[in-house]
Image (cartoon, rainbow, N blue to C red; front, side, top):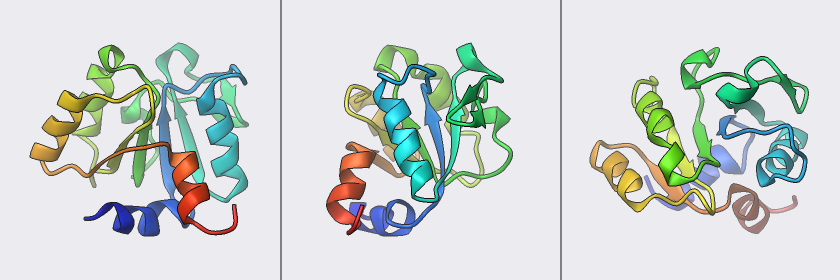
Amino acid sequence: MTFEDIVRKWVCVPSRVALVGASPREDRPVSGIQAYLQARGFTVYPVNPAYRGASLGGVPCLGGLEDLPGPVDLVVLFLSPEKQAEALHQVRRLSPTPVVWFQPGAENPLGAENLRREGVEVVEDCILATHKRLCGKA
């Protein structure tokens, strides 16, 4: 699947998105992106074991990807590479396997390459900037 296909299918239309590394801190990029996506009709699942059960953006925070109530289309990572091992392990167990989206600051060339080798679709870009740039009226 091409980048354009991924954007057309899951970014330019509301989809189901897990935000790994969610935070209650409004100064964090993940919080602004969560609000942006929710305002555009996306179903957003904040994920962070440190805030399990807390309301983040009006949505209960999940402790891990294994806590998702159903399939998601995108798993967006807001974690530094050294904190990604568990999330990358969990994403491999999801069915169907979602696209893994590495946000700026979460770039992980080795992790991304391993996922691609296993047949997982990977994007390395800012989802908010991509939506604004390619999906018409924001």
